[in-house]
Length: 234
Ligand code: ADP
Image (cartoon, rainbow, N blue to C red; front, side):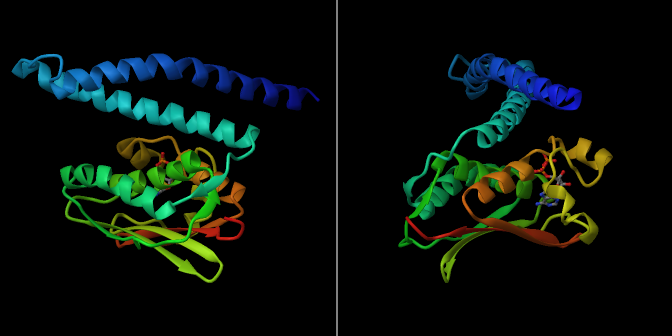
């Protein structure tokens, strides 16, 4: 009983804190982005780097709080499904993502069919799945590498794959990376940043859609994450 009560209090606490952080962070990030873009006036040379750092850190914090909120939401709310064009969502996301990929010295290849069947899903949550997989590929792939994104239909399923030529994941860790807060190497993870929540969220969202996530990876050669979603009842 006591254990259950403590669990409940912990969830409630996390929920309250992340909820309270959301608005001030969004506002601070908005202003930082404006400063950083130069829209509020030209920055002096010595101000540019600090503003860039503040902006990047706020983006990271917002991402973290978004992931915590999203995990709590997927647990407690039913999916808001609609008939959606996943191919269109992927293409739009990649258009925005391409610049960031190039800034990191990586290349992006995509194979997304223009004409693709609709599926029944929650567009906001499925976007989060893609966003988390893309950001991991970006984070764990050294400059000079490649990221490729593919979307295809296989029987009654849709497959969305994000592959990279990055650092890879040891075979004995492939199950564990989907656990909440799990990171392959704590000290390396500090170097790469992150919280270990992304893949837990990916798995929970995909399972809530009746799908599954598979991963293939080889250390120092790269990783490929594939999300399989049922096409039924679009
Ligand atoms: P985070 O990225 O915030 O650490 P995730 O849950 O997204 O958390 O990922 C958990 C761990 O799985 C990462 O810390 C990393 O060790 C490993 N991982 C995830 N994606 C990749 C990838 N594309 N390449 C190599 N390792 C990865």
